[in-house]
Image (cartoon, rainbow, N blue to C red):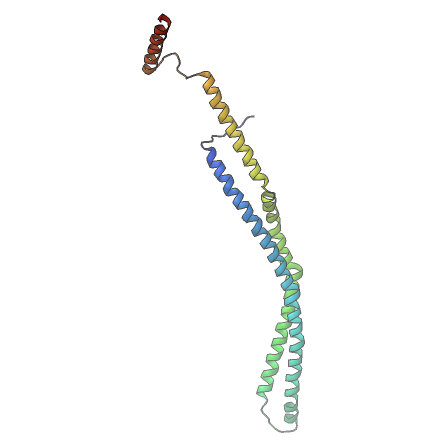
Amino acid sequence: MASSARVTSVQAIADFRAALLTFCQEAKEVLASIDMENRRMTDWVERDRLSYWQREIRNRQEDVAQAKADLFPKQITRITGQNPDFIEERDALRLATYRLEEAEDKVQQCRRWGTRLLPRAIDEFQGPGRQLAGMVEGNPPSIVLFLDRVVRSLEAYLDLEVTSGRDAGPPNSEVPSPATKEGNASESVATSKEESS
């Protein structure tokens, strides 16, 4: 089954080809940039942030130990019957414990993002990203080569149409125009003059 298209401007296709070539180049650059950003983000989560929060756990464990050590003597003096004020020390211990729990939670989040969530998000992007990369890869890309063939085919068709139109003569050759009649009459007069001389 043959299919046809109504093409009104070959130049529009050529202009589209040029715009498509620019798009393909920009898409390649963007895809490469996204790929680098994905690797950078994975490295940041798995190495930088994870090691930072692991160090923070150690530091904050020391802060908790110090807060406990500051609170303990005041608790002992209370047992002996004195009533010292240890509100500051208790608040410092509460804050140090909260900060330690925060660091432990951040380590868990870094591990969860590094091993499951971030790779899944990257995989979801890479499927369509690979399809786009497949369409724009090459120099020039295959889609641009296809448009080149389309433009060449249309130009060859138009050349064939013009050439066959010239060979067939004008479509209404049976009825000559008045200008053609006058031209033919003057040509025949000139020919007869030449023949008589």
